[in-house]
Length: 313
Image: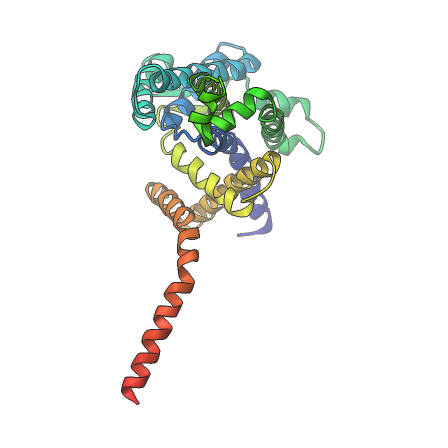
């Protein structure tokens, strides 16, 4: 593989990492801050992609971004409503919404499982035309993705310092304390999930416009990828302020995509990539635990070896 191929591979991994990091930032808000594991991520990601694609195909590339985010808000609202007002467990609520979104996404796509956007104006094609004959022309996708990620990180950094943002963080830590402070935890949960799913919808929209097509399975496994990226980022920046942690999860998403790119470069079958995702998640989750158990395991091994030496002497 020559140097140009390595550069192209790295740029592609960086673009995909930045776009998918928007979903990771959504999980950062819902899972890390609000302490809600939202399993509707896969369906919401596809919803953002399909809504964004349909609006872009109709001739409104910029409006498609806001439409996808609005669709994500609706998805988050329904998921939160099931949890807070109808007594459905958070995991089950996510599964129910994710299942329902499959049919909704098919309907949005006009009862088709694939949308082609080769002749469609997108935010990326608009940016490419804007940067034509400039050094940024080949990096227009990267530039747009970077702007989107920077805006989301800025929003989270400012929002989570407001009264509502602090209430959302407090709800994740201790909902009983929040309730005793005359704050409605149902409202903070609904708000947090609506914002998080807006980011997920935005991520799906940008990926669809980047690859110029939408498949009904475009969001399959996104919750696993986002969780793995979140845990990888947390390993690099376990402590720090909100902007530092947010940047950490973005780096985690980029690292995950680089691992994906390397796996593909070694001609790993595409069907095995989900297995790679699962292995990365297991390693990211079990890593800290195994690290804490290592000194005890080492002492046991040393003790057993010492006893065998004494018995053989």
